[in-house]
Amino acid sequence: MRSPRRELLAAASGLAVLPFGPAWAQARAPLRLGVLTDLSGPYRDPTGPGSVACVQQALSDFAGGLGLSVEMVQADHQNRPDLGANIARQWFDQGVDVIIDVPTSSVALAVSTVARQKNKVLLNSGAATVELTGTACSPNTVHWTYDTWMMAKGTGAAVTRNGGDSWFFITADYAFGHALQRDVTQFVEAEGGRAAGSIRYPFPATTDFSSFLLAARASRAKVLGFANAGADTANCVIQAREFGLHREMRLVGLLMSLHEVHSLGLSVARDLMLTEAFYWDMDARSRAFSQRVQPRMPGQAMPGAVQAGCYSAVAHYLKAAASLGAAAAKADGAATVARMKAMPTEDDAFGSGAIRADGRKLHPSYLFQVKSPEESRGAWDYYRTITTNPADQAFRPLHEGGCPLVRGSMPHG
Image 1 (cartoon, rainbow, N blue to C red):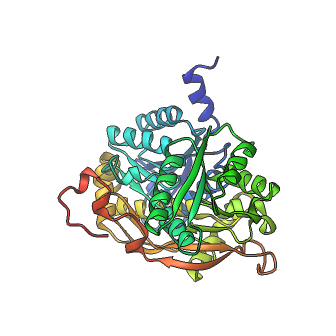
Image 2 (image 1 turned 45 degrees about the vertical axis):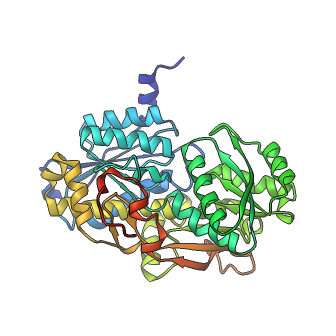
Image 3 (image 1 turned 90 degrees about the vertical axis):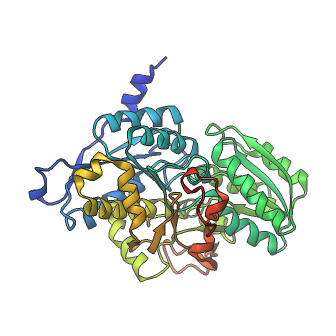
């Protein structure tokens, strides 16, 4: 039986400390960034090596121009909260100043707690739980890219308004899946729909979803919502089509990503509806960013939303650290996050934005529908835009979250 210490060393093995910044800045104590992500599990494609590539791109784009010396390490948390927290604790004790990405909500919540204890910084992009800006909010954590409330509103409400008024959920049995099902159900019921049933499956140990799909068919619901992500969503869609459920129910990926669509292929994924906060082909700036980072991406893929969020978060962190001074940023994570909140965000991936008092990064979200093979103009041309939720409406209103950092604040979006 492997010891926790040995597992920690295995997860962090092979880490390269990569320096960024001008040669004249190397004598200063560098900022140290750690990308803690899923390098081998079900979220590897939409996060993982692509998140690492986008962090590297942000460092290349900004560190030198801001006069910062920066080093980067990476590790695989294996979707385990205990391992993720242990790696975070070790990194912080060894001088890492900020951790980026952290897919899997249970891991992100654990790492956020450690970051607060150590007065370091967590820039979450990969985890979806709204609790990071709710009851578990922290002065040391910023929640970038998306959350379950955003996904639920963007997809659940729209599908219900368009006739999908009864839902069955297949749900990953951990914090993220539970929250996503809860939040979607809230919007379905607000639009006059109902949840006809649900079933939870063991995560991350499930690959055969046949029994769950049979239960969905028996419910006679109009919509089958997959409250999961990554390879699990892809497997659900493939197996649902093998069962012919796409002819009986509307299949909805509640957290689909560009890379799941790519893996499935347009002939399988066509007509799926999903909500994302970033698409590489949205405008000239998103295309310019995506083309810069594409050579670094695994298989020269286009970046997905979580990966672009890592780029955007690191770009803003570096600007705040330069404004505050690198030594001060290293000394006080909460002060660095406060400076990030005080500064407007601006980058090629997400354009203009802001960070609220609860740590929620604000930007628009988009309801997309997957194109058919005939509509696609070429590689990675997968989405057409259905609706846009503006930044002040895309996320849960500040006064509804219960974040202790904003008690007494005036209600606003």
